[in-house]
Length: 427
Image (tube, rainbow, N blue to C red):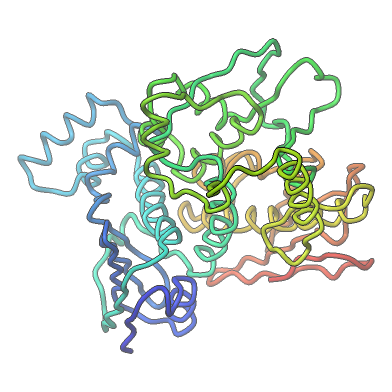
């Protein structure tokens, strides 16, 4: 199969879907002005990925250190052995008992996924797929990843990155902590950031914690890294979480007014590199009253624009619309939980004992609760598992029951039919 062209003509999602559906084996090469990435497929599943700017072998030790699975001294010792034996770093780490085989598998799998996920942010580039009869890959440490699971996570990133980039405009930006008279509490049941209550995201407090701010472990980790001197790129580099999860946590801290941008030389650099919106430039001064009227009209236009897919606002007083929006968000999160469970089982060969085992490699802690603050229920059965969503008052919602069948081969998913009308999960 000859497959080549530009990402403007044929999207990355279309490419992955085509290779996955036709169960092709070969190497997909993508080139942009900043990087060249290769993704290796076996029978339509991803079994490898590498990047010129983020070499998998070079970054493996860094990922293990950031995850707390390896110390710098242990890495230095392993690199010395690698230099003498010319063996792969992963083999050295496991052969000499420095880390476990499971830890290595998870680290390599995470690195492969992060290289692939970065591709979904590419706006331009060339691609070429070279079909092969067979390919070589690290069969001991890599479990093939379905194109479907990658596309599900990629779709989430495509949806959320533009929102995040409106406030975190560049990796050169610098942030610092803001003083607050409220106590910050770390909890898996963090205050939920809402995107449907105004032009700026709000914060939904937990009952009985009016004087406290609850943040997730991911947010606390990123909060501790913010020091007023490191750029966003620096924080991403040293964070133990994936790039997307790190930047999203920083965005949520910024939304909750817990951090602020440092102005000055760093801010000037960002302004010089950020294209100026034409709406911000005027040839002649505009009278202040007219500015106020235009601003009000713009806000009303946005608030009533239902056809805009990025618009999360709803008219005031429309509780049903807010309910349906949050239910749709819950449906999407359950789909992410399913994807995370599938990735975990493909790496470890078993189902997670609890949903918390998926954090942080496969999903963020914030996605294990619904927009109303209810934790999703997870039940294992002999041939399947269940993920159950809830209504705002904490009762099981028959529209949000996900039953995923497991067998010895490829797992198949089914979703129970809802007993009442409304949104339901579909595979």
